[in-house]
Amino acid sequence: MTETVKETSESAPVPPTTPPPPAALAAKVRTLVPTMTRSMQRVAEAVAADPAACAALTVTGLAERTGTSEATVVRTARVLGYPGYRDLRLALAGLAAQQQSGRAPAVTADIAVDDPLHEVVAKLAHDERQTLADTADALDVQQLAAAVAALASARRIDIYGIGASALVGQDLAQKLLRIGLIAHAHSDPHLAVTNAVQLRGGDAAVAITDSGATGDVIEPLRVAFEHGATTIALTGRPDGPVTQYADHVLTTSKARESELRPAAMSSRTSQLLVVDCLFIGVAQRTYDTAGPALSASYEALAHRRSARAPGR
Image (cartoon, rainbow, N blue to C red; front, side):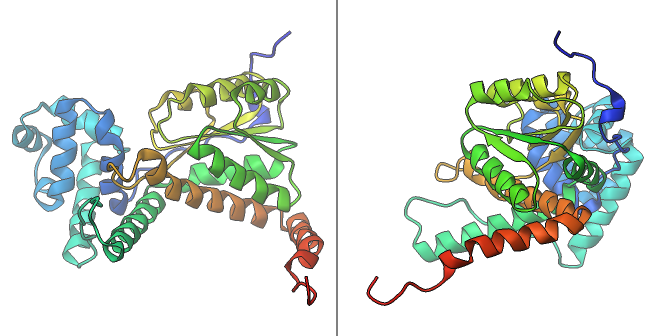
């Protein structure tokens, strides 16, 4: 019989989610605006564009400024991760203070087809730095800690990703294997599901999908979830369908998309940052075994790094 009821004792407890810090507000707006209604978009874009002015407004004032309703303002605050409008106002005041201190990021233009290479390098470097900063600011450290605990204690770890996300999944699996954990990345959706069926309580599954709506990634995560594994979603859409089967959600940001910078490219940088955070967290937690495992893998590959003999 298929196991459909998940034992809560088999997964790490879900810690309460705390409101994002002020520096994360602009990143949250960039990530979530495409998923909002038009009226909510007006509120979100207004607070991101002029946090100082909006911080001085009551909920009624902001509703009037954006041509929306008080209910829309409150819903927007909650979608951005704040319990209510008062919490959003505090974050706006903090963001305004940071901007006044000169910490606000500059904005560059999209990469054009005729840009010289030195401008391409500069624009990409700027966007990558901003993406990393946005992801770090918005990352829920409590959710990250819970995900680390689940991976560190897992008997077996399955990782699901398609396309560019599959490459990120392979990176995570390789890192975890080097510290002695049993981890496998699956990019074939059929193999992902057939492997997910074998998971049980005490196992873990990680789904990587920027859109949060990739069916070939959601399906194996659902199967893993229903079989009792602790499930983790790494996604740019904290409200995406994948999260309904995730015990822990790690949200990523991404750079602006353009014709020469598609979503798969702009999301990869932030995904790799979260993967590195997971790996370091697990390595710290399991250091007694991770340290020797890293040393052993290093020694096993040492001969491949040595200089070739003359004449070869």
